[in-house]
Image (cartoon, rainbow, N blue to C red; front, side, top):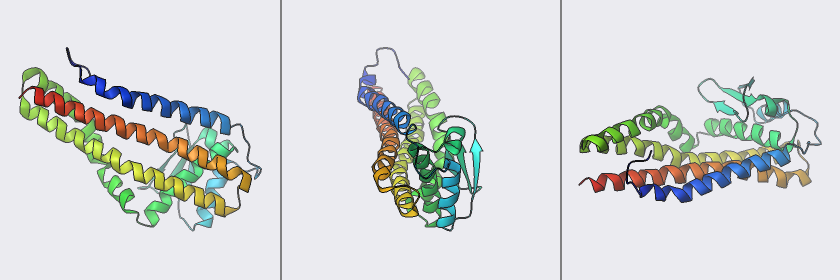
Length: 226
């Protein structure tokens, strides 16, 4: 959100560059590795099912529409894979399916950051939606208390992003171990698995950087009204 004569948006430029790079990286990596079919000859859906069975997990696997809409729903114990990933048999598809299984492993093993993030989901959602309207109204009408509430709400969203970082990297670590120990991927396919997982995790680094710099920007704008 930009305000007249507000030069604090310059703070966001590094994060915007990182976000652009991260999106380009994950798209290019996915485009390349989605062309590399795994020699196991299984679909992403079948890989997810086998990893679930091998790790003694109890959850359903469903196909969901959209591109890269893959996610794990811990409240319903459902792992949802986008159509391309569920039906595809590439290194990229295996990596994404395994990453979501990694989240299920986090829940089973009571990984602290995963549990904390799950608690913060509704709070962060409300905070991110309410923060800017409250801050904007407070800035326009010089209601400093509304600006402070907006900053507090956005701080919760930033906290959520910060906690998300270790959760996503840990899920990728678990995914890599699960795949390499499963016998589903060959030794020479493992570096590409790691490459896909690392590229996807970079997007969360960019999102966290953007959120943190946006919070700093709000704080600077608030101080300018004192």
